[in-house]
Image 1: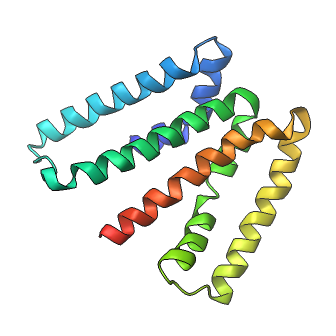
Image 2 (image 1 turned 45 degrees about the horizontal axis):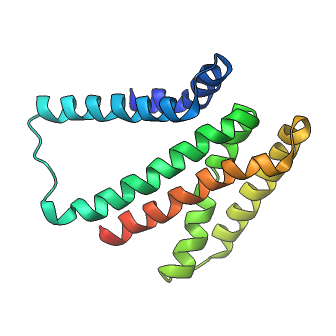
Image 3 (image 1 turned 180 degrees about the vertical axis):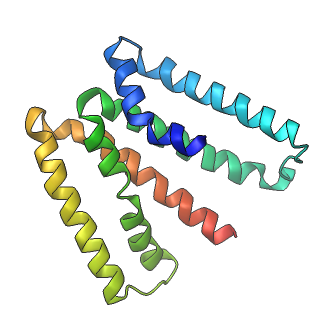
Length: 159
């Protein structure tokens, strides 16, 4: 259910924005509803809360994700949903590069080829998607994509 909702997020947010919903209330309601559903799910399954010692790190990751989600919603005000989603989901490339820079992972020829292919496809597609709008507004989509990889790397380092 979460994957389906996340898959439709760009289109649904774009429709809400076009219907006149403001960005901040939209983001706030998304998180309120999400937190409520997760809370109900955890309560129904009688899952324990995370230990108190992990709460500061979890709060930091939540803040990063909030910035990411808000940047994505802001990007949808100015660029097509398909373009915003494409740029956002190029984050695995950033994860590969940051993992090499900060975690010492090797950049193999295969990883570099995949990174180059992903960036080339993204550049070609985004170039076509920007024909109707100014490139500076594209920055919000990039901001959304760039805030996710540090949280993924941090989760991986904590595991």
